[in-house]
Length: 244
Image: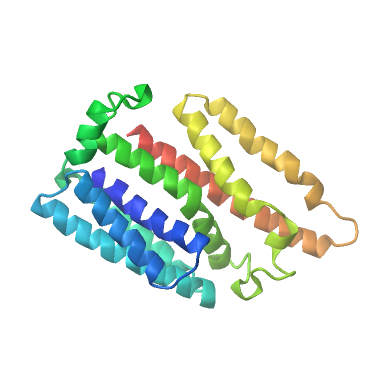
């Protein structure tokens, strides 16, 4: 699973860098560089691992480029296919992935932090990767699916006609919700996680009612449902990976 973890870290760092300061090419190159650096830090230095790190760097750059193009032209299926194919390939090739150790493994063995004692480097990489994905890439995936399904028009992004401008706080609530679901799931409190999902619907209900703007409310409802389900699937996908 080390290759999957490094891939997730690279993609998430690129998305996080873009959310902080959108700089074409630089952000995805930063994500690729971080992915390679983390892999080397984790002792992935055998020739299959080095080849995998090179492929991961290319995928991260390709991801960033296709995402930028998708948000500009509406061709949102491109980056989704790139990421899906890369994850599938990493999963199929996982038997040949090296076991993470290196400097990261040495630090984990010597760490004075009780919660990290006994955590393998592979597990630590996967925890970092999934946490970064639910924190940053989750919003990107939600927006890509909304665009791909025609729920939103990329040309209207950040305008008064954008449904996101009506349902305030989505960009902040989404990551918080996903992190909370993953945290509760890892703690074994899946029932509490389902309560969080139900509570979101109740809290949004007043915003999805109107006696005078029914056509607009239908658009908001579709936006809310599609976006929420994709966000939940990202969190649940992270839990599935961490449960392996």
